[in-house]
Picture 1: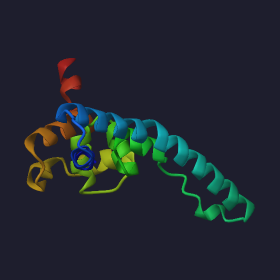
Picture 2: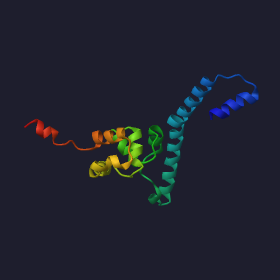
Picture 3: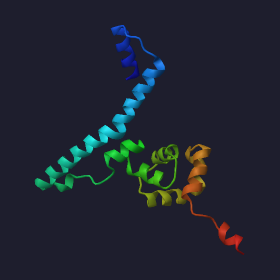
Length: 147
């Protein structure tokens, strides 16, 4: 998009500032992705769902992740949303998502079952640390500290 904007300015002989063009393009993308696209896609989905109900095809309605949430969070699956809701960064959520597709509870169980294998799963050390800090149940540290 930025390249196309620059090309247009060059072919029309108009002056431009590269930093300004980059900022303006990114602002436009953000406005469309965060506000306009979700608004119009939500309206489209409402009409589609109404039509599917009218023709008795509710089985075709996906009650999963809505497009607004996907655009706002930059995610495309239930697992990514679940992991981010559990407190993981987007980077860690994406790394874990590449291994599995689960709900929040299933994600915690998956990491718990593989606690000793996380380093061998090609995760960066920082992601392994975050998975342990955010998803694994507390060890017996609390019960030992009261004894």
